[in-house]
Length: 147
Image (cartoon, rainbow, N blue to C red):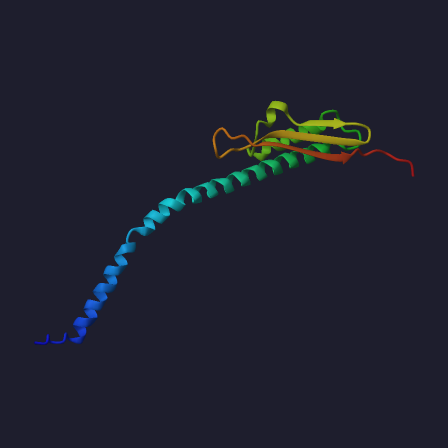
């Protein structure tokens, strides 16, 4: 005897069940993939934050050095005017550059040129890792010349 043919809707249901059962082998793969990739994502996130902090510290140090040069290069500028100006800038700039107050901004003035240097460290996302920052700016001393 021959078996009776299944109705069309029954065959569709059976085919759908087979397809769903075949897809169960991949069940739970997404959380495992995320667990494998998440440390890499976190490392990239913290690295990008650290790079941004280093660039902000360098920019702060360079702007402070330029401020010192601009104050020191003026005609008949007082002694220490550049260091005082750089210190005021660093105090107002916030704490992107840390440890600058140990050595302080240094400005060297000869008769022709002024050089100001600011040293410190950038903020660190990873404890114990140190990123030193040193920026120098130069400028010509203003002087009276004969026409």
